[in-house]
Each structure stands twice: as C-alpha cells, then as structure tokens.
Length: 340
Image (cartoon, rainbow, N blue to C red; front, side, top):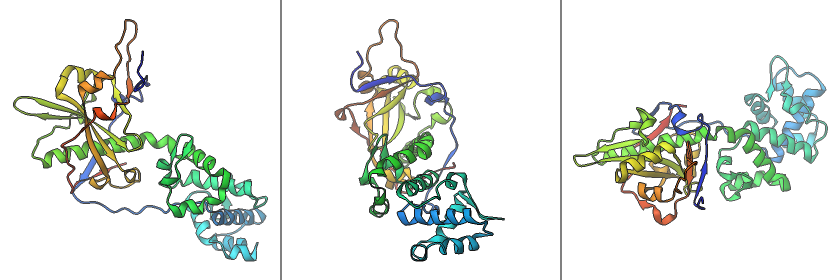
C-alpha cells in the first residue's frame, strides 16, 4: 500500500518540527572569519607520541608540561626525537585528555593504553583522539556503516592509512560517539540558513517576504509572499547533495499544502558539504535551489483508509522529474550566521 518513494514514520513530539524551539539567527552583509582549533589527527606518529607521554607519566609523577615532555623524550632516543611530543602534550591538555598542573595526570580514557606500543594500543589511542576531536570532514565521509574516502582530504587519508583494516571501523565508531548526537543541531543550523538565504534573495528581488515561521510553526510553511491577487506560501527545506532526494514533511505542513493548493510549495536549498563545517554560511555554499509544487508532494502520499492516519511526520522521495528549477537567486552579499 505504501509506495517505494514514500516511507512513513512517526516521530516523538519532541522531535517533530512543531516541537523544536527556534534559536535566534542573525545575518551580516559580509563574511566573517573565525579561527577554529586544528584537528588532532591520530596519525601513527601522533599515537606513538601519546603512548610515550602516558607511559612516562605513569612511571613517575611529572611536575608540569616541560618535565613531562623531557621524560617522554628520554624513553626512546630515536623514535622520541622524531615525534612532536610538545605539540601532542599541549593538545592532550587542550582536549582535557591530560592535566598538567600541579602534577601531570592523563585522563582515564588513556591510562590503560600504556603497556606496550603495539597495534591494538595505538588503535585504541586513535579512537580516543577521534572521539574527542573528530575532524570536520567526518560528518560527510561517514554515512551509517559506510565510509566514503572521496570526502576525506588526501593528506588526512594518508595520515590514517596505518589503521589498515581497522580504518572504517574506527571512523564509524568515532562518528557514532562524537558526531551523531549533534547532527540534529547541524540540521537545524542548515535549515535556519536556508530560510534566511531565501528571505534575503526575495528582498533583493524587490519582494516583501514575511518570515511567518518565527511567529508560529502552526502556519505550516516558513515564508509568506503577499500580492494583490494571491499569497505564495513557501516551505523551505535544507539538504546537501547526498540527502536532497529525501524530504521530511510534518503532518501540519502536508495539511496546509492541501488547504492552500497552488499557493503552497516546497523550496529546497541544496548546500555543498562546506556548509557542514562550522562558520558562516553564504551563497558560495548553495549548489542549487529547486521547488516542488504542493500537488506533486500530495500525489506521493497514499490514501488513508478508515482506521489509519499518519500523525507527526513523513519521509518523501520525490522523483527527479517532479522538481522544478527555482527562480530564487541567492543574494551574493548575504551570509547567515548562527548564534550557537
């Protein structure tokens, strides 16, 4: 009864669109630059440096960062002098994986990883580092149980090659533990940016859009465009290329599309993967803006027989031919910034 391109699923009230509180989002007319801490990528050398530091701290109490580094360097003359012990020690402290004052104390996650520098120990250290400081590309490169190496920078791919057969498992585990819990925040950030980009584009085109979603989610759409003879009602959805084939629509949005007929339409803003990295989102991140008429959306929904009614949300998979190219052109001077 339920067609292949439309999969229904119920969401708890706390996860539906109506229940999500909106955080205030601001915009500027020029991009802002922001400094971001460099990822502590667990290359084999980095993991060896962590091992030596944890091992030396276990043997004798070390007072301060300098004494800790000197002690670790003395443990292996050839290997230790080739490693970035100072940078690694400072990185562990910055990540709260070690305390440097009054006496050096590695975090509990690392204490048991100092018996010998074998492959399982180094892989364990890599897991700890990736969980605490996941690289920015991990959101895009890991999708469920699959790792797409084409989304990993070549230099990082080479640095992690020593993981061998454990490569996929380590990255998937890091994604599940450190990244997946915050993906709802990422979706909301992209959704807010999509609405603001559409609003700015309409204003630049001389229109006077009303951001009704800020007033209430009960409207069943995000932006209202009033004219003498009609009112256009735009429901804005954000996606990246990998996810743009799926559209999540709440029951209220679906009902409003049926109520307002041709006035209601869905606008999808497709972002590049660069928008997933923290920082301002702007027109350079927009790959495409396209639209799905309300009638095309409703045609995908199965009839509701007696005794059945979907309630919170549905997942639609519109065929590619149902989408239309949008006339909405992003304002090149607009950058959206989330205050998270």
